Image (tube, rainbow, N blue to C red; front, side, top):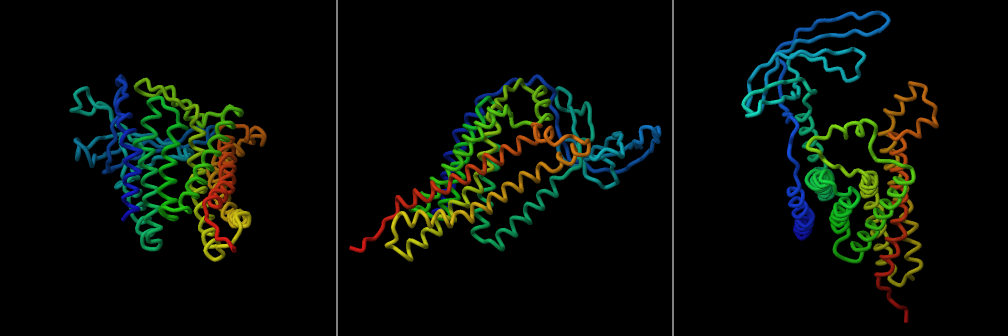
Length: 376
């Protein structure tokens, strides 16, 4: 119960002031507002076009009757046409019964739809189902550890949605915004596992130190390598941001590095102090030097596994782009020099440095604060 109360207080400390601040800054909207609606395909008429052999492309045109399923225009049916190329990997070929997302522009008074288009398949229902299934499996098998994971994910998601993104769109530094969010998540996790004691404090300080180092290294890499943390597509989209938003993306890569390092650093630090606590209890006369060396030795295994996890996740994000450019016979040195891939490499390197540096900090703080019994 005390842990849950602490979590609630920590969340309130972080989000209440920042949400209030985010609501203070707003810009006048002089761009058309786009609304999105869930809809179902009722009827499909498909016409196939055979293109010239030199193009090697077949194109189909679909005339679809689609009914809106939610919102103020529920049960209204619209006839919408869409053209699809078979070579398009994101081909939107519809069938009767498919759920889709429609994008619509309304009239000035909002009473009627002025234009409407098929935006994409509707995936939110499937996402909700899998979230619920995942939560049930976590709680059913991992019990309180699973609850801790759910709370951590919820706090992080809420922090990004209601705190980080709104304030960043208002021109605040991404790195500075990420610091309190990482700190709150670190405090929740370390105190949940280690408690309000020396172990919890040491793991919290070690985590904070590791994430801070990762952020500093990420900032240095971001500036020396001239990276923005945004790919070419995202940079092009910046030109079309509505409401004249002055987005400050200069430290976006640093913020991402801190978040990547956070989870792995928490695991390393908490597991380290757990091992060191057991050693201290079994041998209360152990010297501080031996306790420190034992902590470093036990932490290396946890560090190695967590670094592997971070590296595999980063590489998995790189594979689609890697395969794409390899298909165009792009030279390897040009490939890794591209923003879209070099960003991922620099992020992983900075996160790994932060994870490694959290080990000596955690071991030192725990050793410094631990009381040693004397033989005399």
